[in-house]
Length: 598
Image (cartoon, rainbow, N blue to C red; front, side):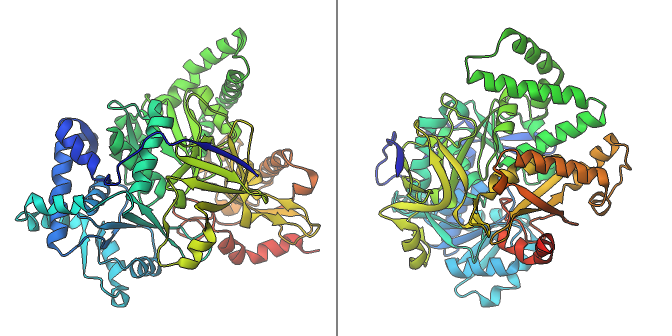
């Protein structure tokens, strides 16, 4: 058993809570721009004074509407300024936020609201309201729905205008580190989602210790800025929201993922956060664009140079020839990539799944250092992260201050510290199973090196055991195959089977540029592509490249290219883009069996 820990750096009084920061900023830094709101093609600043006034006003409206201390209020919306406003208003009213993904089904909404006992809900639009109303008859104790795009925030604020400030002061005074701030439901890759009890102390102590002991250089107090485009219902984006508030970092929101590139260019953030799939898309998109313009060879040379340059930084530094080559490609390629995301980003924080060494080195060589971290909903997002001053690409970094990581005898990663959840809402059995003497059993398999850097090798429940008894972690193979420009998703299979296989889906957006570069019709469909000999040869090459990283017994012997992608809409991906393995294996059982048919 191996263990690594970092002492807590920031101690807080028991009475501290998440409403302290916005109130303090309004008093001490009234003109500080805490947010920039999308306004046509530009961004309108929101000062600390304005934000706190809006938060307090809405909190009074909630109090007047009968929302009491400890009551649960659901929040279902895309990532937008109002999400953050409502979240802080719920806390200021002494209540508890229950996030719901805006893509959730009626059945999921009914489960989350009924299980949490939410008394009311904010939804973004009429469509969300209609979905909620379709299950409302089964909700006990539910009283009211407020619609953001219908102006209900203003209506609520006007409703509470007659209440004195003492009402809010009393609610805030009743909050402390141990009080529940939010119930975040797991995305449900297996079974029914469980409600994770995250306290004010979990979010507050994790954010402040992360800032002081890990990410100070990244967030840059008073001058840093970031644009959120991940769903705020996800714990990763939620943690960054709190981190920005605690650190006086300017925050922007993008509700539509298709607007991310132009919004990044106009917002010009200083750092980013994203799941690894976003960085894969950025790389693949740049590669496809270069290939379509007849500059594929230049891009590949530039990519190789970026990787070599980054690797050299870890081994004595690049020599003169490499530095000159890197300088050339910085003008031809890297500068354009940085400009596409605003030109000011030097750091990005990635989590949710494995990034892979190749992409990590590529982006650092381009001038954007991706700090890969690790965590779960149950650990309030981060448990470990690479630091600007201590980075080891290929790992997920060392524990945050106030966090300890232990590797159990069976290889399972266990976490203890300021970030670990209080328990699962109304689920004592699951709480006892997951928490042991304060240690949270993550279900992930990993290892710690001599410097305390953690490496995740797979999920305990996803380890494949072949018929010959060979244990295979699917993630490394899947990550390598998914890095190919033609590939969207990959699922490695083979549990109880004689060899390892894979289900692969094609990226519809990547087919056109690839087809043009390879003399094929640009309107080639997925159905046509999966039957095309050259496409199959390209996928076969990607599989063989992945196989080169593992032993013969772990390598993929057969694969099937599916006729459709795995998406959130199809029910095969969670909102955080994780594959629901059990659902995929159920729906594509015939494809899997066909691989193993004699």
